[in-house]
Structures are given as structure tokens and as C-alpha cells.
Image (spheres, rainbow, N blue to C red):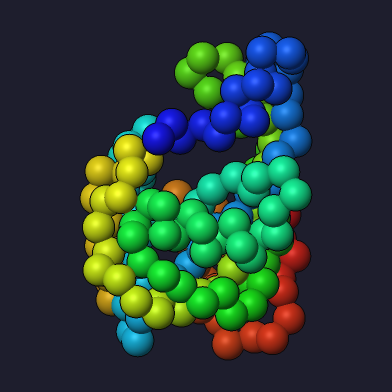
Length: 156
């Protein structure tokens, strides 16, 4: 499975490398005092599960789908934890995009975590107090999801 959704490839055929505005999701999955993390195959960074929302798909459904596709685990999406914008991403091939990220706090329901597609090279549970180094934007998303708040955080 390609890390780039088919509908994005079709759009790219029409618009080339022009900037796209895309909705994305981050699923911070918790199992007791552990957090599920993936090591991305594109840059080697440890992150929570992330993905692009398909056209017409509910974002919470997208978060659950991405978790299953990438790690083989079934999750419950508990709440919207935060929203943020990732601006001006330029990929190696010249494609440009900005993402509206919706981060969800999620709970593991079932399944053994494993590398389930080509988007990651490793999948592991980490203790909440011993998470691997990760980009600051991802660390913020994890912190947002682990906070015991009812309302979503709106971050810049």
C-alpha cells in the first residue's frame, strides 16, 4: 500500500506540485500506561499513528482506520484532543502541502501491534514516561491527547 492515498495521486496529476490543503489525523493510542508509536519509513522518526482523511470520511473514522491499517490494532476514538496546522511541507519530489491536523485521544481495544503496511519500519508500545525522541509537533500532539481535558486544544 502506498503511503500516498490514490485520490491525492489523482489530484497531483491535475495540479502538479502546487500546494494542497489536506485534512489529516493523528491517533494517540493508549493502553494502560503505554502509548503506541510507529517509526516512519520516510524519515525514521517515531510518531503516533497519522494519516490523511479520505474524501467524505469522518475524521474519527479515519483515525481508527489508520491505526488498523498501520499497526493492526483496533481502537476506540475517545475525544478530539487538539487541532493544529502544519504549514508549507515540501516533499523530496517537490510536492507541497499544508495540513489541518485533528489529534484524537484513543484507547486500544484489541490486536497485537505490528508493522502492518509500508508506512513504518517498527511499531511499539512505550511507557508514557519513557517515550522515544520525536519531532516537537508530535510531542505536543501526544501531550494534548494524554491531558485529561474535555475540550480540544487549538494550537498554532
